[in-house]
Length: 65
Image 1 (tube, rainbow, N blue to C red):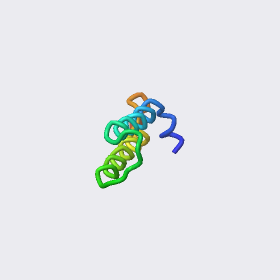
Image 2: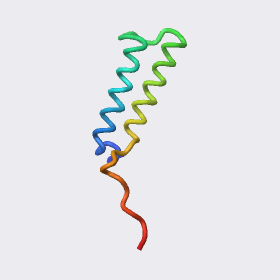
Image 3: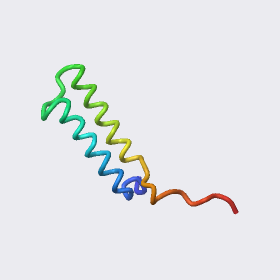
């Protein structure tokens, strides 16, 4: 989990994208119907993707010996 949080750029971008997506779909209202819950689910998935994604500058070390 620490590695995911250290990739601050993708974490912040994903969370903000999730929030903006939800506010664009529903406004500042809690979900009250199927479309509202769907918008909330998609927004949460976008936020989770931003948390799990890695910045290009934090790539894995090359394998091999």
